[in-house]
Image 1 (spheres, rainbow, N blue to C red):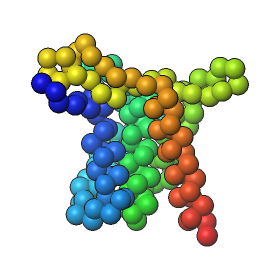
Image 2 (cartoon, rainbow, N blue to C red):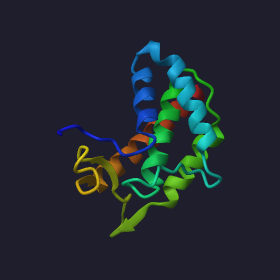
Image 3 (cartoon, rainbow, N blue to C red):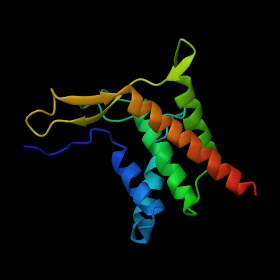
Image 4 (cartoon, rainbow, N blue to C red):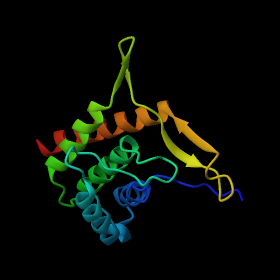
Length: 149
């Protein structure tokens, strides 16, 4: 089996919203559904939590994926409470690691092996997680600066 497996519960939200924001208008209804799901699943501390299988209730990657989806949905005119995005940002910032004056975020599980290897073969990347976070922050700031004009 050579399939690629995406172990994060919010990966589908991320992907649908990204495609919608990129111009796939047929995903408007799907984006409304995933946005409602996201808003219903946000924890009090602003985080989102994946399932236990493989990534052990990951919150950082889940929150980053959910925030990215919210930003993409809002960029296409869907109603996203800014408070939900601000809470997600606050949670992500609370998870930063600082070493030698540099900031990064811990690696999340991005892929795992196919059916037979799913529990033993993982791909994790601190750099990928940090870039995903930075990308969300940049897009959020860009979205807000556009609204202020």
